[in-house]
Amino acid sequence: MSNPLKRLLTAIIAVPILYIIFLLGGVIYLLFFLVLIVVGQVEYQKLLESKNLPNEKILGIISSLLMGITAYLGYYYFTFCFTAIVLVILILDLRKGDFSQTVTNIGATLFGVIYLGWLLSHAILLRNIDQYENIKTYALNNQGISDLGFFLVVFAVACTFLNDTGAYYTGTLIGKHKLAPKISPGKTIEGTIGGIVVCIISGLIVNYLFGNPLSSDWTIAFALLVAIAAILGDLVESSIKRGAGIKDSGDIVPGHGGVLDRFDSLIFVFPVSYYFIILYYSLHGAI
Image (cartoon, rainbow, N blue to C red; front, side, top):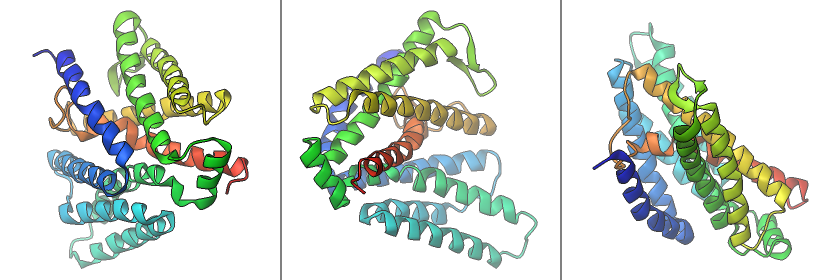
């Protein structure tokens, strides 16, 4: 079976499942992202092993899971947990007799926690943004939307995936100028522009389907920011794989590779979306 066909079949199966998970929210949504975090950590640790780098497997997985769980409880618990984890990782390194690679040991473990635990857990913060009572009230009374978190997650994910699709097909058809040849030789400037255009159109459509809770200018700004974050997230993950000398981080997603391959863009998109929305509601007096 060809790779494009695998990608299409994966999308046909995955999109309805993801939609239901996003709609349900709550514990189901939390468990879904905790699984992604664990699988992503396993893939990341394999990358470390391929370069013979220090690998604190259990510590990395537990720390990343705690980030996701505390994100579900609320932002203050989330930031407290992150600070505590950093301190624990620094302290635990003292137990080792050989300090010649202290920076490398700490850096390898902390990077995985930050990349997968901290950044990806913003997906949980974004879905549960209604925990801010003022935001929830503003969204209901001024925007006519009763489940803000669902709208935001659908917006971010739809724009990200369609940005990727738009970039792929535009690049295939008319791509000539390389975007970052040393990092990702397949990406072109033309494809990137095509992806951004598709991303903005997708954002406007999603916003319309949800009853236009955002004005057109804010919708375009949101979609543009998502597109930029998605591109950067993709390039960062590509640079990590290139440094490890591998093509795909795994094979759990047919036609797409591993969790890091499929969700690399979203690792950047979720935190950018969360803080963009916090800024939006701050400027509108809801915070």
